[in-house]
Image (cartoon, rainbow over all chains, first blue to last red; front, side, top):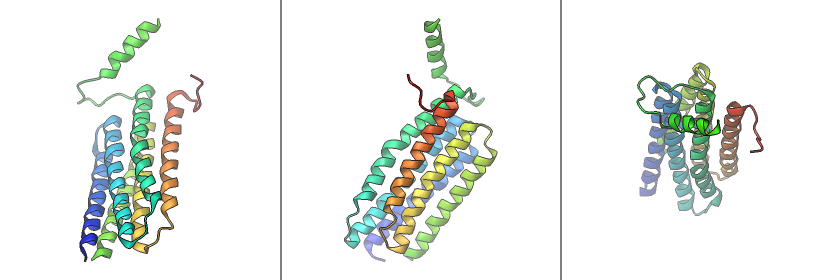
Length: 118
Length: 91
């Protein structure tokens, strides 16, 4: 194995391990908000790491592929927005936090807003 | 050696797709299912990247790009739908 293959292998393995960590989080965390936290952050970083490895592989081979850079940029831009939308819709859908949660800051804000509307 | 690592990463990503599918089946509420489907989209992008290295072709670059866009739009549309019952609200 050459040096660049070692670097690409390390990046790919980091991506796969991050994907597995996010899978464990999705399966085992107690409520929806924790699962959104696992799914939207960790699996996004895993996908970005794998795409960086793919980009490096083809760059070393001599082909510059701007579509891969565009994919990385787009995932980086849209995944937090998707996580925000899922969390907000889950809260407005009326899903309770888990019993071990101690703080609910959005509840105070929602109550203040509904008082202001009345 | 390099091919073995590619196979290991593919197996990891596939295992994660199975886990997300289990969450889609047992998920107690609707947002659970939506987030599991979103995570499946992310892992599919990773799988396509690994297959690009394994087959040594850049033909699948568009597939990864379009898949990321579709996963994002699907997630946002389903979240808006369960939030108010409408996808395009005027305000």
